[in-house]
Image 1: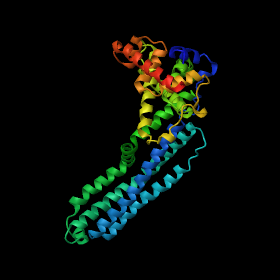
Image 2 (image 1 turned 180 degrees about the vertical axis):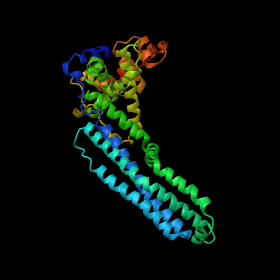
Image 3 (image 1 turned 90 degrees about the vertical axis):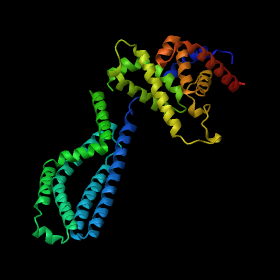
Length: 203
Length: 163
């Protein structure tokens, strides 16, 4: 090796093809797929946890002596898991062959539709679940169960539950969005940043 | 990333980015990923760039930081290979430069630590000790000694490779 490293460096880069920059057209591909895949994975885990929760709550309250209410809660949670599963299927159907921007836009549309759907579902679901849960707690913790509910002054327990149910119904969408931010906050921020980058690129 | 930004702020410095990315990658695929990540981070970090600073220095800093971070990530996530599976820098598939001495020099540089790679790249780009220290965030007094040590090491590696 006769040449100094300085000369090798200088002379090596004199050739025309030594410094060809790669194209940046697929810049966001991996990032887009990564964001959506991570979201899918968390969403799937969430659905499984809801399904397990439905069995646990149903089983727990059934053992506590309120099998009818337990079945209602179990079915309500199962319904959430079922709707979630249906939404996940739609997400799986997103076309991967399109550009990253179109892919992320499709995902963003799916996310907005999903928030809107669950916002509507939860408007009825939250109050019903709270009331059933309150009833189940009351009946399971009193000596004479349903008899006490009908014949004792249960207003002190059921009134706050009713108020909470009304509040949850009114703010169902906000509560769901807060819930989403807690679980998927970082991902949603990343999605927004990526879309903003793309939009600047298109400008 | 707007095409204006690419034309004015990245294109003139593409050679620097390519040279740095090549030193931290073994394959064309990795090189393209690193290059793209550096460009993306330059675009994202443009808001943090202070106008009184030098954009070229900023490019060096961002490129080196991104490459060293990706390199560390890749190193920590990759499973240990047995020596037969190690990629050969001399293989035709990984050959980045047609100029053989340059390719050999890159192969030698890739055997250095992450920081030594950065220092020697800046030295080869004819940056002063002061500039190297500024880019690396270190004391300029030790740069000269370190460069001499790295050059000696590179010579030994190159000598061993050729003979």
